[in-house]
Length: 148
Image 1: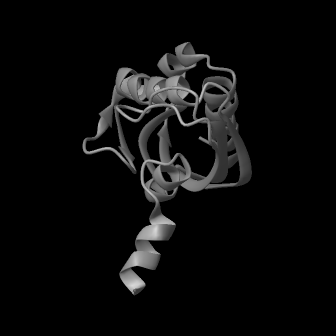
Image 2: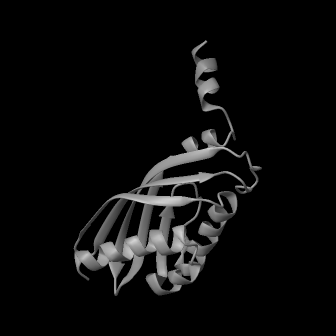
């Protein structure tokens, strides 16, 4: 797969799947044996269905979520993206009730591609920042209390 094709695949993933909420695209771009390693999860996400379940949690919690790709690079069978996630916490995030807070969370994703599909995917983002921004805990006051 060419670098241009790998870049097109990751752009499609963020634009069509996340931003347009077209989860059916995952069946086209995620290999059945795909494994995804995600910050904030305790298990690997396997195949299109595992990724769909993960995305549905975030779409429910942040109905207006949007991803902006800041940088995309590709070489060989690897593609990487630096992105920013924005949204308003208007739904439950697992057992955390809606706060109405807006968030802006940066992250990076790195994928291995074969046969025009993602076969492995690693994503890293600051889950603590997200939890702090939605008010699940107050990181700033925790730090202040520790310093007293």
